[in-house]
Length: 169
Ligand SMILES: NC(=O)c1ccc[n+]([C@@H]2O[C@H](COP(=O)([O-])OP(=O)(O)OC[C@H]3O[C@@H](n4cnc5c(N)ncnc54)[C@H](OP(=O)(O)O)[C@@H]3O)[C@@H](O)[C@H]2O)c1
Image (cartoon, rainbow, N blue to C red):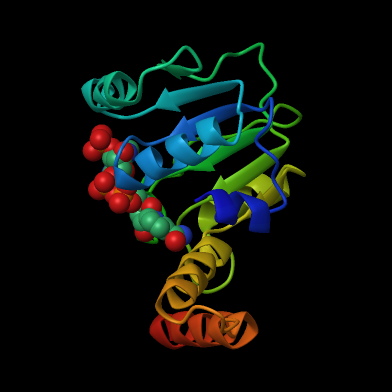
């Protein structure tokens, strides 16, 4: 996940982050963000008990469970690690408002923009979907399997986009 943040051009050092979700993807994100030096990661999850379990497992002062985004806060990153957006009929994981979120990243990916990325961009918020993360983790696996060989990232990204487009047709 650290490499994914890097690929997104996001430097977690000192960042205030709102993390949506508390499943496996969120857990990976929490570790990468805290190891990367985020000053605060606020976890908001539908099932609060799951967010508290994640907080208890990871520990530390920087990780907190919240029920809503802090209305007065400005966040450097809001990250969707829920599975909302996989289905076209899903509600948005969080309705954003203008001027409070510097960057919105959706771990979900789809052909074209995900609905939440579209929503964020419509408000002028910089936004990225999960495709780069998907490609990045595949590239990292290839590097582990074939040390010394550079993974063909462009070809891998193009194949992923083509597969998503085919699936959407
Ligand atoms: N881009 C990538 O490379 C990459 C890598 C990994 C995962 N992902 C994506 O990340 C997403 C989450 O994966 P995961 O492995 O963490 O899944 P998971 O462990 O099953 O967790 C699902 C999360 O989504 C929340 N959620 C599900 N339905 C919801 C709803 N109707 N309303 C509000 N919250 C809801 C769950 O909340 P509750 O705890 O309340 O159920 C939980 O926090 C998936 O969409 C997956 O495709 C992307």
